[in-house]
Length: 242
Length: 242
DNA sequence: TTACACCTCCCCAGAAATGGCGAGGGCGCG
DNA sequence: CGCGCCCTCGCCATTTCTGGGGAGGTGTAA
Image (cartoon, rainbow over all chains, first blue to last red):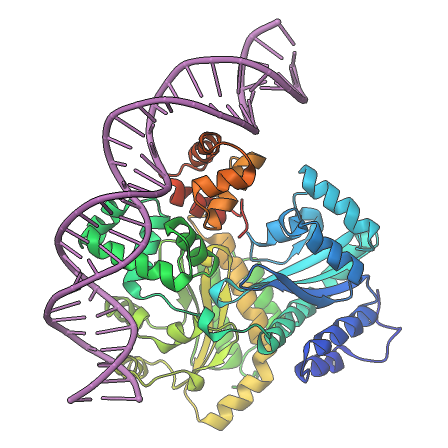
């Protein structure tokens, strides 16, 4: 995990990333980084607005397919843990105790994912959520040292990847960013806080009929089936905060 | 805007930030940075879970009070613009055309805010949203050069400020989340995805009565008033992923 | 000026959710 | 062996939400 084996410098990789015109560029950059750091894997991935995981990196295709197929998105402690925190996290600090997590962990290691990992969560508007991960197989001491030395660079790298990915994202549909009006946001927020329609209407000092119009309107904008769904979507997109 | 006038290095300031035990530490760090970069202002601020703006930095108290009093939160193009983007942004690129924005801009400059600015938005879980801003009074050329040189450091600084602020935030209680049972999680997930109770019961191949028990049980565990509230809480706690 | 989005209010009938209750079987733990 | 938790199902009356509809007023932007 030192940098002796490669000729390209970190700056060259950053440069390469900055000039990328397609996802292959991110892919190539992850591979360059893997060589540069001489680690097991470098992966950048995110969950798009349809809840589908998208990514690029050095994991085997077989593992990625298996991940999707097995629905590991709901068992992966890296995802579960990082969706709740802002800071980069060492995989050791995550909660691997649940049964699905353990199954996942074993399967991951069998498929070449390292026993060590460090993931940097990044958030964007509308609930965009991405993870930049470096993973390796080694003992705890060696890993700690590696992270200690490189954590600033990794943070920067995470941001460069994310910036590029946002630029290149194919499914960047403009209609998806249907913003809610202020009143709609207030309404959804109050509902998410547990108030009934009557209560919320009272708090906003408007009639319940009016409130209903906001809820309906927000529901349509969010493409939701019912109020609960609308609140869930609003939260997932970061439109409301509870 | 060079670093000749001060004896403390950036590393010393980072160190100081890392050791901060209270918000005064962040305040002191912003002032040190202001001296270090020799710029007009350094400000870190965010909107907490109650929707209140909190901050620290080198702005005058008078300006901060005026900002809150006038409700500039809803007119400030920096806030409006950054809440919709992920990347750091130069104030010049924001939309200052609306009337409230222009009023705000004039008032801000009158109160000592620089004509140039660069703001880095940062997001956390639960919609936490923070801004790290550096502002100065100078011409465009000088400003571009400054940003070009320091943008990587500023990104790192933004993250260090945010990390510390999250640690120090007063209302931060890691309440022992009572875990939901597998069936409860499935139920909440289906509801969050927009299915009605009848549909969800069908999908789980159980009677609607049984499903209701799960919902009720989850609702109690989550301390929620109703189903919508329960789903919102489950999402906020990361118990379910949609 | 003419749109268009937003805010406000009203009606109704049917569908859905709620609250609280009881009841049985299964599984693991001390 | 109980105890607690989980899964499963049932019933009831009551409250709440939902799907449409219409009808004004305001403000900003083409």
